[in-house]
Image (cartoon, rainbow, N blue to C red; front, side, top):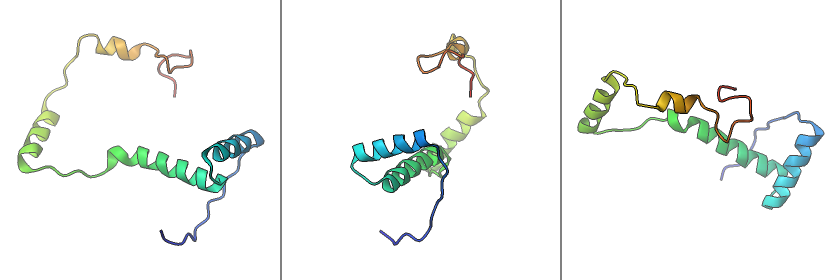
Length: 96
């Protein structure tokens, strides 16, 4: 592991700090190590679908053909995706 020379400064309220302290203690690490691990894991997740991938010629052809096909309606999918789920907080499924 390389030496760390960069710093990241964050502003947080007392409740956020208490939450991070409790979680880092529960994980058995320092708050700094806990926050760094959580932030880098989240960053990797955000970027996961934006990374390059390689396909051989046959796989590329199939992939390209699939992209070129016109979109199709799937019976019931539009209705299903417009309904609130158990993960929604009661404000509806289209809240950001």
